[in-house]
Length: 76
Image 1: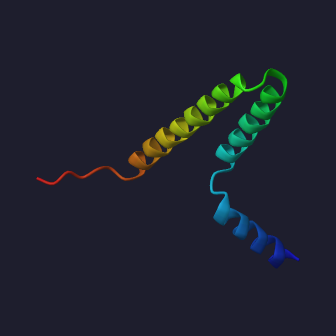
Image 2: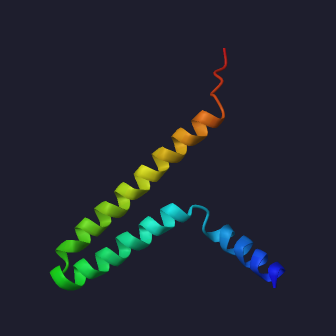
Image 3: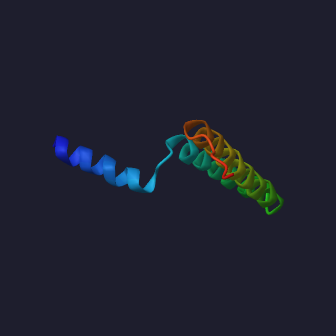
């Protein structure tokens, strides 16, 4: 049973590398679905903007994290 759990976690880890980012996306999508069902199509603009902001936010955070791990070396 332990082997199956470990294998399942490893398989899931191949598709979901960052649980925080995945959780944020799920929350945004759930909130967007609720907003679209109550407000209508104009809420789609907000949904798209939130998803884009989330993508930029996590990309910048990952860039900063990787820059701290390995300092850049410039030729010259």
